[in-house]
Length: 223
Image 1: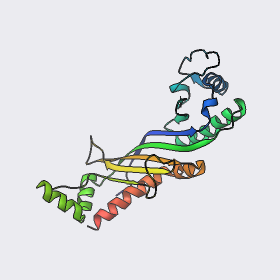
Image 2 (image 1 turned 30 degrees about the horizontal axis):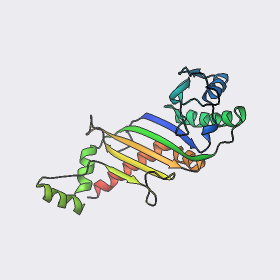
Image 3 (image 1 turned 180 degrees about the horizontal axis):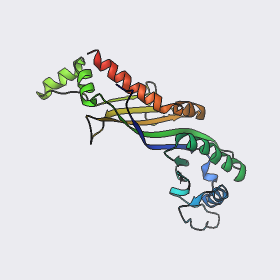
Image 4 (image 1 turned 90 degrees about the vertical axis):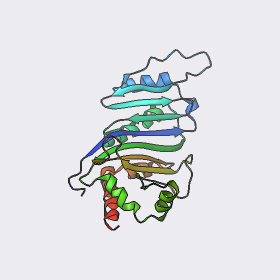
């Protein structure tokens, strides 16, 4: 049952990849962030004459939010365990770039990376064992290996795109390795060219994850 399940958000990062971030000056960006209350995490070298500064990694922090950039790949990301706060701040960061640095951003895609641990009264190993009973493929694999087998989780992805597509999702649900009879680990990659779809996906994210686990549990009870 999921009613008494507890959930812990272990990782949440939203990022944008932009086609014109080569125009970007990390020093100017860091100065603009400082005016918005961010503390620098990196000491950037001086800009060379007619050159650019290459930066990859965290550069500033405010409260629980860490800002990272990768100038070579054109990526700006925000990491925080507070989903609503980091989504709001991501909009502000884009506004800083467009208004303070006067760069009209051209997004290629947006992406969220999520890791969640969710505890359940139902043993995840038993759930997947029950699901495996009616999967003919698992029986054939067991015969080939001459050893009883079962699925150890489920992984689903976008049906009409490929992993390096700007529109892609990948969701993996497995028993937690260190406590497989007590909890699930859920890993999510969700990428889209439309930022609104990213934000829609993140709304009520905890509810959606609980519904996924409930669906697995209900399906297992039918087998």
